[in-house]
Amino acid sequence: MAQRDTFVREASKIFQEYAYDLGEDDISSIFSDEAYNYWTELSSINSILTERGRQVLSFMQNNVGKFYNMFTAKDIGEGTGLPTRTAAGSTKGLIENGYVTSYSNSPVIYSLTDKGLDSRFE
Image (tube, rainbow, N blue to C red; front, top):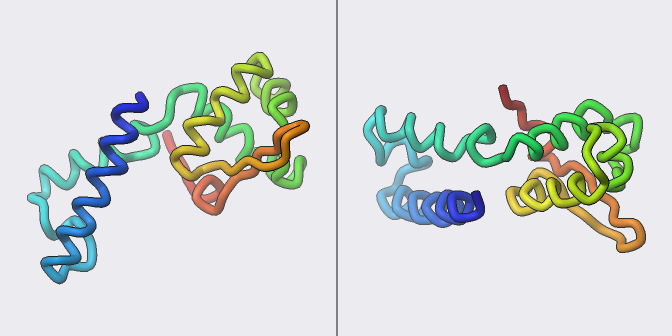
């Protein structure tokens, strides 16, 4: 999974730079419809996040008000039924992809970013 994430991030930067060099506003204009649809699917939230990542993100989105957008791994674990260590590990991909941020050390606090608040998936 990490290799695909790295590829999508790096390819996205290249595509954006190429589109900019051509004077285009977005990358849709540099692809055929078929290629653009494939890229959209490849880089979508459903492709990027693991099942556990989606489970954690969904829990956080559904409980953002209850926890004032400040979750511990214990909160996430209890809310999802995952062991605390698994819950903490599942936030790693969410952080790398910009859906969640973390701060503090004891305990670590996880919060949804604007991207995490706004993202929806099937």
